[in-house]
Length: 201
Image 1 (cartoon, rainbow, N blue to C red):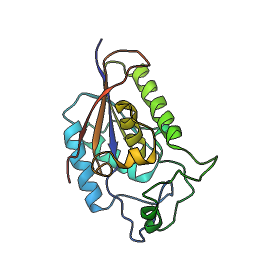
Image 2: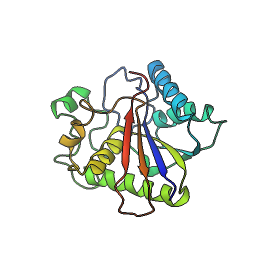
Image 3: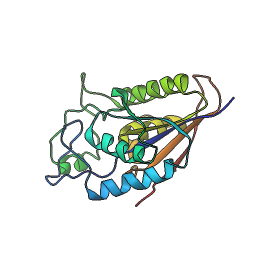
Image 4: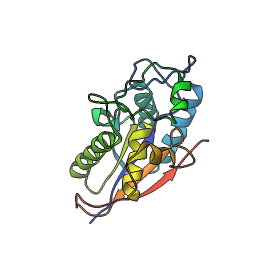
């Protein structure tokens, strides 16, 4: 069986002068450093045989994907709602409040807001779709930190919790980091191997 690999790339750092938690809010775009980070990630994945590039609908993820497809002969970006940032009630609130909560945007919230397992379920649905459509190939997906962090926790057999999210890779994932999940079979129950790389720190 040929390996199928999904390269999850966190978006680059965002211009956020008011220091708010932007979540799913529109209008938050990459800063100059974020663009450089995205380009660094693009240089790495351009060395792979990429069959498709997907992105969250949010601007920062799309802009990151745009830097990647420039290195891939302007491959079309496919938008997937499954790659969205977590749905929480904290959008627009000062970052200081989130720091006080240890970046826990889940505790004490109810439907329609998401829990960590909801975010993971979306991520795994995306991966399942990719494995069917692009079996034996490599795909890039630009997305958000929690989506990737909960995928890592799942691959490690760890609890799908905010605490586990914060424990991953020195308190969280790097901007424009590349987390590559590789599946060696077509079993839906396979736990993938993964690698983690930060191209520009």
